[in-house]
Each structure stands twice: as structure tokens, then as C-alpha cells.
Image (cartoon, rainbow, N blue to C red; front, side, top):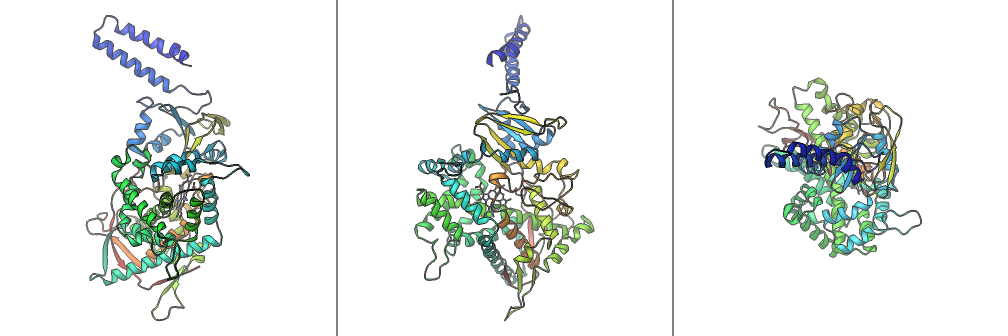
Length: 578
Ligand code: HEM
């Protein structure tokens, strides 16, 4: 291979350089050599590892350019590469000592997911969790055992945890009970907040919308999963440590001297891990005879699995930090976008009659979900019925808003390691010829770029870059993420907010119920308007862009804070029933 490169590329280039440099100044000769070296490297990065390797997209700075792009521009870099190369359903990015394959076509994404024996996420987990959650070497050794067991083979920690979480969050009694508890916790937070606003002199509060919703979700989720004496309830200052950790997760993942380069996140993580360890050591996860409610059953089982595989309590605390993270972050951010669009559409004079009616449309849908409580005794109350909220077709505008917020703000990617050389059958470059067999080199990484697919006009129409709360109302279809309504042009697998295949988010059913319930509670109980000096100039709430210049480890946040005024619209307390 090297000989071929030298003969085909380097030798002619060197000849040319020598000719140019002959008789010229030393400076010119150096420049010529540098140019030749650059051209050589540029051409070298285009060399495929196999004739059928996906088309290579070279970078201007050979080999390190793509990595630099990802570090500097975050998720936006790969997303935009995909959008600029719509003729390449999969492409190769040369990176130092390896390659990265980016998939931007839904059918190929499904092929990646099906090839789970050779294309797997699990071999990457030990290293990722070590960096992000600070696992020690002994624990990482345990995590590495029996990563992808075939039926009948011994099962490792990850396989057992995967089975538990997917079984628990699958449709059924356990999920129904957990969802009911979760929405009760959320309703309690919302009622308490409404009561606090009512006590204010002006009967209204000004808040940072995302910060407010995060607080409601974080407190409710910590209560739900970890019981009365959860670390955030006992140490409320840990809530900001949690968001510090969240915001530096990308830097922790990169893992270069995290205690220095990701100081705040590192300190936040360590504070949370220490509090969770104390929580476990003091048995606060166990319900007590004195009436203390301990951790949820799912957490009890997770802890038992970790200990059963030989994890120490100190490390088990870090595994729980990962679960707390999964339970809070996407739920809070998705709820924020939904509430923002809902109230922005209602308050903006420039968005027209259609949008103006979104809030009233959704409030009217919700009248069958949240209604006067016939059982309230001393004071009038409301009752929220989860069965009604979940029943198909009862809240189409709310469902569509949920999915559109995820489509627009989730640039997530699913990652797989090529365990051994693999072939993938899919659309040929340009899409015109028949299916093509793509060669994937062992030890490379495959990324399914959800961000590209979510923004691709071929799947969502010419207005793909616009927010359209009614986009998912149009036509019925189906896809691998259990989303039953899609538009005509939508490929069934182009919606990637929950990932797909073996790593498809297990919490998606739970998240859908809790997020829609929280939006329903907030839309029913509050009126939300722009804070003075923070609106769109016409008195409405301005909707900022998403911040897509970060590693898209979860639903993206807004580019700037949105300050709003919150006023109580209905102060009746809400009882939640199944
Ligand atoms: C809108 C809310 C949510 C979104 C958008 C979301 C999205 C995702 C995504 C994209 C992944 C990775 C998929 C992949 O790599 O292919 C994931 C994994 C996961 N999610 Fe969610 N999630 C949400 C809510 C939740 C909730 C509420 C929970 C639990 C309480 C949860 C638990 C998990 C877990 C445990 C995993 C790891 C699965 C594994 O072992 O591979 N998620 N989620």
C-alpha cells in the first residue's frame, strides 16, 4: 500500500517540487516542500482501506481536521457535513490512526442497528463510563466482562443492567406504577410552586424558564427514584452541582486532565457521587419502619445488580448518578421547549391566528384529561387522568408538539464500534444505482447522525428547518420508535430522538407520559408571558435558537436564557389518577 502511494502520489509530486525548487531561493524551496507534503497528506487521507469503503470526505487539515472540527463546533460539525453531502448516505471521515463512518440515511441506520453482533455500543461503555462517572480500574474490569453475551453464555454487569432497565420500563404494570408516582411527584411540585406564587405580593414571579422547569423535574425525579431522603432533598445545593456536571459532560468525556479542563463538572460529579455514597451507606434507599419512603423498586434492583457483580458501594453510587442523569436531563429540556413554544405562540402577535390557537387548542384537548375533581372535599380540586392522557388520539396537538420539539432540538447520535470487519448493505452513493455493499474496517467507529436526519428536507419537506408544531398531525405511519404519526415524506426511521436498535432509549414511554403530564399541568395552572425587556419586541416570548455547538449528549438547550413571568391561572390542587 505505502509503495503504491509513493509511486502514484509522492514520487510525481516530489519530481514537480524538485523542478520548481531547482534554481530558486531556499525559502521558495521550503515552501515548495511544505506544499508537496500537504498535498501528499491530503491525497493520502483519501486512500480507502478497502475499495468498498464508504466515500471519504477529506478535511482541509488532513487527518486532524475533522477531529478539530468536532472539538470546536461540537455536534454541528458532523450534522452539517451530512447536510452538505446528501448524495452520500454513509461516508468515511479519516481521523488519526482510524476512521469514523457517519450514517445519514435512515435505511442504513436500520441496517447498522440490525448488525448488532458486529456493530455494538457496549465495547465503548467501559471507557465512556470510566471517564464520565469516574469509575475505578477494578470496576471497569467488571464492566468489561461478558459485554455482548449470546444466549446461554455468562452474563456481565451491562447485560444484566440492560435487561432489568428494558424490562422494567417496557409497557406493563411496573411502568404504569412508576409513571403514576412520577406524575404525582410533579403535580406536587407544581401545586407547591403555584401556592408560593399566590403568596407573592404581586401574585406573579419572574423566572428563567429552563432553570425553573429543571428545578421542578430534578426535585420530583430525585424524590421519585431515591425516596424521601434523597441527596438533593437533603442537600439542595447539589442541584446546581448536578447541572455543573451536566454542562461539562462533554469535557469529561474527552477526558484530558478533567480535574483541570472540566473543573466545575468534575467537582459537581464528585460532590454528587459522595452524597449518593453516603445515601447508600446510611441505607436511605431502604424504607424504614418510621415511615421513610426509600428508593423506587427499579433503583433497589439496580443497586442489587451492581453489588451482585462485585461493585463497591462507592462505585455503585456513581452508577446511580448515571441513572439520575438519564431521568432528569432530557425530560427537563424537552418540557422546556414545549412550554416555550406553547406560550410563545399564544403571546406573539406576529405568528398569526393558527399559532395563536395552539395554546387554546391544547388547553381544550386537556379539558378531558384534567377536569374538576368530583372527589375533592374541603376545597375544589382538579383530577388528572393518565389513562386519558395516554389514550390514543386524545391529545393530538400535544403529541405533535412533543415530537416536533424533539425533532428540532435533538441532534443525538447513536455510536457503534466495528468489532470485526463488517459489510453493510444499503443505498449507493447518489442513490441512483442498486444497493451497495459497504466495507467497514474493524475497530472503527460508526455514528448514526440523528441531527442530520432531523434537519434533512428529503425526510421532512422543504420547511425542515422550521418549527411546525402540527408537523406530526398529518398522516399516519409508523416507525421503530413507536411514533405512530409521521408525515408523508418521512422515512419511518428518520426520527432519532430516542436512538434506535439495542440502545433505543428504554425510558421513552415513561418520558412521553411524564413530559406531557408536566406540560399539561403547567398549561392548566399558569399563564406565562415574556418578562419585561426579554420578549420579542411585541410583548411576546422570543424563541431562541438551540445551542448546537456542543457535544449533543442530550436534547439541546437554548442559546440564551429565556426570562418569563409566571402567574397562577388556576390554583386548584391536582390529584393524579391512573
Ligand atoms: C425526552 C426524554 C428522553 C430522550 C429524548 C431520551 C433519549 C435517549 C437516547 C438518545 C439514548 C441513547 C440511544 C442510543 O444511543 O441509540 C437514551 C438512552 C437511555 N435512556 Fe433515554 N431519553 C429520554 C428520557 C429518559 C428517561 C426519563 C429515562 C429513565 C428514567 C431514560 C433512560 C435511558 C437509559 C437507561 C438509557 C441507556 C440505555 C442503554 O443501556 O443503552 N431516558 N435515551
